[in-house]
Amino acid sequence: MAHHLEAARPGSKDPGPFGAEAGNQPKFVRCPPLCETPVPEPEPEQEPEPAPYVEAYAPRAAVYEALPGFLLRLDAPGSRGATASSQGPAGWARLSGGSGAHAPERASVGARYGFGHHSLEAGLVMPLGDGVAGLASIRSLRGSADVSATTGGGRIEASGFGAALGLSATGANGLYARGGLSYTDYELDFASDTRGVLRTGVSARGRSLDLEAGLRSSLGGRAFVTPRVSATGARIDVNDFTDALGSRVSVVDASRFKGTAGLVAGIDRWRDGSGGALDLRGSLDLERTFAGTEARVRVSGEELFSVAPRTRLNLALGGSWRRGGLALDMAVSARGLGSDDSRQSGHVVLKLRF
Image (tube, rainbow, N blue to C red):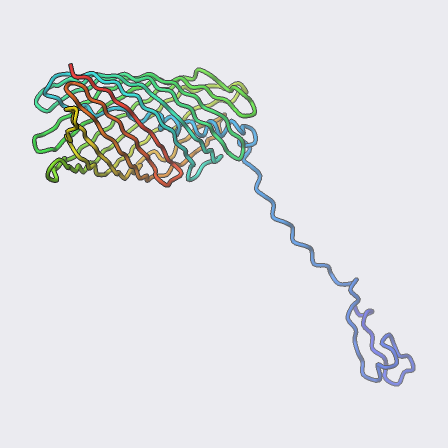
C-alpha cells in the first residue's frame, strides 16, 4: 500500500500527488473506495428442510399419525353403571352420539382432526344380591375423523361391534362402587385428500377397564351431592397393513390410563302431576391422563408421534323420569372445555323393568 500514499518533499518544486497547497507538511489521503475490501452481505437463513418421510408420505403421514388418538376417543366406555335394583331385572337400550376436535401439543406432522360418532347399545341389569347388580351389554358404533395438517390430510372411517360386562355395589350409607370391562372389534378405512382410497377393511381391537367410587349424601329434602373418583385404562391394537402406495403401517403405542375426580349434585324423586318421579343432576369433573399421552405409529420404518393434552375439565347435565317399571334418562356433556381436545356428546336411555 506504500505506493498509494506519498508525501511532498520539503523544498521540492514537485508538489507531489497532494498538490501545491500541501506545503512542507506531509499529508496523507485515504485509499480510493475501489481498493477497500468489500464487506459481504449476510446470507439469509434457510428454512430447515422437511424430514424425508414427511416429503415422501405426506399427506398420508397426517392420516396415520391421527389414527391412535382417534380410536382411543371412539372407544370411550358406554354404559358401565349397572345399578342395583331390588325390584327385579331390567332391560335397557341406549342411543348416543357426539362430535369433537383435537389438536396435539406436539407432533411429528401436526395432524389435527374433527370427529363424530354414534352408537346403539342394549343390555340387561340383573340383581345379584343385597345392593349388588350385574350388567351385560352389546353395542354397535360408527365414527369418522377428518384429518388436516400443513402437509395435507384425509379421512378415517371406523365401524365396530363389541360387548361389555359390569358390576355395581351400593351400601345403605350411600357409598357405591362400580366397574366394567369392554371389548370391541373395529374395521377401518383410510383415504387421502390427494391419493384417494389408501386401504379398506383393516382390523383393530379395543379393550378397556373402568372403575368408579363415590359417596352419596343428602343435603336435606330431595337435594343430594356425590363426590366421586374414577379410573379408566384403554388399549387399541391395530393389525399391521400396507396401503395402496406400498407404505407399511404399524401402530406402535395406542394405550391410555386416566383418572377423574369430581362432584355430582341434583334433586331426586321430584314428583310430577302424572304420578312419575323426576330426577335432575349436574356434574363437574377434572380429568387427568397419567400415562399414554403420546401415541406412536411407524410408517415404512419411520416413527410418527403425537402428544395429547393431559388435563381436561368435563361438565354434564342430565335428568331421568320414572313411572312404574319404565324409566327414561337423558344427558348432555361437554369434555375438555376451552381446550384443543374437546368433545360434546349426548345420550338417551330407555329402561324397562320386567
